[in-house]
Length: 386
Length: 154
Image (tube, rainbow over all chains, first blue to last red):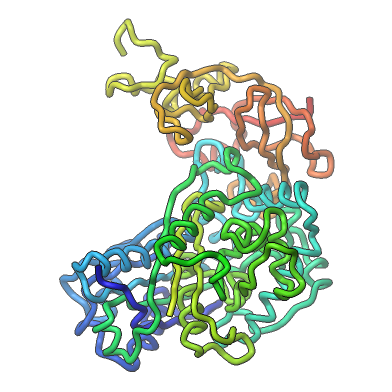
């Protein structure tokens, strides 16, 4: 079975921008293909993670983005799974290369979230919830995650201050990441003083609305060599859908993420303790705490210690560094592109090309967890290794 | 639907998937309008699913029965929507909760009292009412008459 490699990566600027979705994609492609062949010389297929057509009134992103990077008559399609769309696209690329059917597949994500303002994003994201009971109740992304966070704080020793520390840590990481939307630090009091969006979650517990695109070229070792790379393998993939309604979930344990991560670990032949860096889906600070537990980094009920240094954490924690990019919180959360942006960060960590302030020395294995809908409505995990 | 078909068992034949079956959304909301909140009870594993559907995701079984649920339960978690979808802007802030009914079935709904008045474990009662103007405004054509469910303190 061919062993998929990361051949090249790129991102657009992340944040509020005048550029449209396709332009953001052009920026990401420009970076990824700066030192290699043109897309038309190597790319066999395109998968595009994209959350919603409501932002730009545009579907057909497969066709559009293939055209915008010079491809014609190749399979190209949009992949939809709300915020997990990016990792679903990456997964398709990995499976295609593994199958031996294709040598190089472009996994992309793009979202132009600021197009409709806060209301536009709120309305577009609400489409991810069960229409029959949840949408008609008027829930929103922050309130859905707040239902989980409220119960987590009730059932564990975690406090709102602990969640604030996660935001502070991720802002500090973002301050060291030239790709990040928020390249500035914050402090616990600022987070705690920010307004409630959906209690117990406050504005500074929430990832921002972000415009952005990211691309990863997944390829055989031979194609990757044409880009001067190939040392990073995509060694494990896990994906799964849980049920759509939040009410029926285990509110404090993200079962779907546990399943997906376990599958990815098994494929890669690693354990949680082997993972040096992890980009988890911190759409809200509480997500990072709960995903640290689901991924096997933290004992149950102790994931909120992710902001502490490894030496300060409870017994049973791994030494994994979480959200070194700044996470969704500070790097930004361009919904359909987030799963790809996570891969970009772990690629930089594993190739030692992250900025020195956030580089984890000697990192050889990383985990990505990308979730869509609310929490584990759909989850995708990838393990990258050198 | 043939005469010997029991409308309270999950439809396993194509002709049984009808708009008057509680296993479809039109049938579910029509029953709710009459005061019956139906769950599908999995005869294989016991899980209760709202709204009813023809298969149990917990065990994979397709042997389900529609059963009216008790209208009382307790809050499992709750929050307050401060930044609502545009259609409900005039209602914000409003309280939403996940409620576990006395049968064990769970569902999400609005709570009729303020966030400060709610707590985990609080007993609540399901109430059903016709949609207000803003709720009709956000409805799709086939949803306009579907009732709104809410929880009030019990």
